[in-house]
Image 1 (cartoon, rainbow, N blue to C red):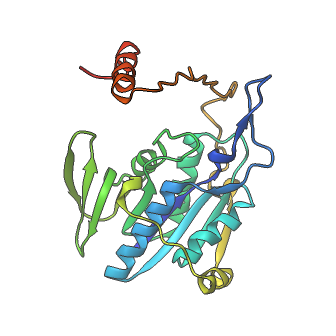
Image 2 (spheres, rainbow, N blue to C red):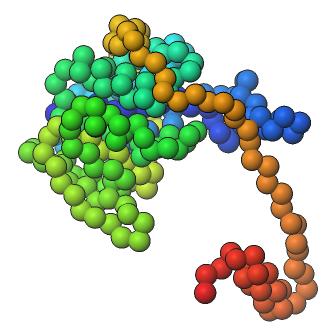
Length: 254
């Protein structure tokens, strides 16, 4: 089975700070990593390969240094990587188009796995857009996946309930963070990843007249202030006061 995993290099949002004077996020010096949920997609790809055999190809659209992030997924168990270098002002239209062209250039595939969203923007657009451009079925928000010889079945997380959906191949599946626990590669796997191939394609070589359709005008952090209310002394009275306060704030449902 030929499996493609789409992954994105993002800033580590847990390390990001906001400039108090400008309210703008401070991105300089913040560590880069593979988006967390994309690692869940990678873990699921490994499980599918272990069950059915085949090959896993990782595709990333990003800057040149994203090669180092691709190596993390190669160490986990991917067989090869593809990096599509792209300009800084890229939007979801450009990203999904470049991913689609890269998939077409790769050739035959059975299933494409993506995280349900990236941890930086969390729009959830990349997977559905890619499936639309390729003209293939999509199963989104999968919390479990069972890939068989002639079909893939997944339980979709719809909030208060789950829906079981199945599709023939080729198909695209986006997974939730709850689907699995991504493995940590061993030292030997990390060292071995250096010998696995990573192809680098430019965006112009895949689509020469691609332009962004969305312009980012400004980016600001949201300041949050805590009320710092502390309830002390009698436990029962404190719990009652806490519940009353939360109810007044609308934080509790009736």
